[in-house]
Length: 36
Image (cartoon, rainbow, N blue to C red; front, side, top):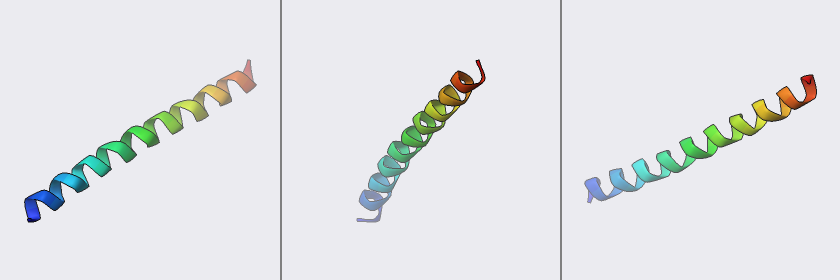
Protein backbone atom coordinates (compact mmCIF):
# COMPACT_ATOMS: atom_id res chain seq x y z
CA UNK A 1 0.00 0.00 0.00
CA UNK A 2 2.74 2.46 0.95
CA UNK A 3 4.68 1.61 -2.22
CA UNK A 4 1.54 2.42 -4.22
CA UNK A 5 1.23 5.83 -2.57
CA UNK A 6 4.92 6.54 -3.09
CA UNK A 7 4.58 5.73 -6.80
CA UNK A 8 1.66 8.14 -7.14
CA UNK A 9 3.55 10.86 -5.27
CA UNK A 10 6.57 10.32 -7.52
CA UNK A 11 4.37 10.67 -10.62
CA UNK A 12 2.72 13.81 -9.24
CA UNK A 13 6.14 15.28 -8.45
CA UNK A 14 7.42 14.51 -11.96
CA UNK A 15 4.38 16.23 -13.48
CA UNK A 16 4.69 19.33 -11.30
CA UNK A 17 8.45 19.48 -11.95
CA UNK A 18 7.86 19.42 -15.70
CA UNK A 19 5.15 22.06 -15.31
CA UNK A 20 7.44 24.31 -13.28
CA UNK A 21 10.25 23.90 -15.82
CA UNK A 22 8.02 24.82 -18.76
CA UNK A 23 6.54 27.69 -16.73
CA UNK A 24 9.97 29.20 -16.03
CA UNK A 25 11.02 28.58 -19.63
CA UNK A 26 8.02 30.60 -20.83
CA UNK A 27 8.82 33.35 -18.32
CA UNK A 28 12.43 33.55 -19.52
CA UNK A 29 11.26 33.63 -23.14
CA UNK A 30 8.88 36.54 -22.49
CA UNK A 31 11.60 38.43 -20.59
CA UNK A 32 14.14 38.10 -23.41
CA UNK A 33 11.47 39.18 -25.90
CA UNK A 34 10.92 42.36 -23.89
CA UNK A 35 14.65 43.11 -23.81
CA UNK A 36 15.23 42.82 -27.53
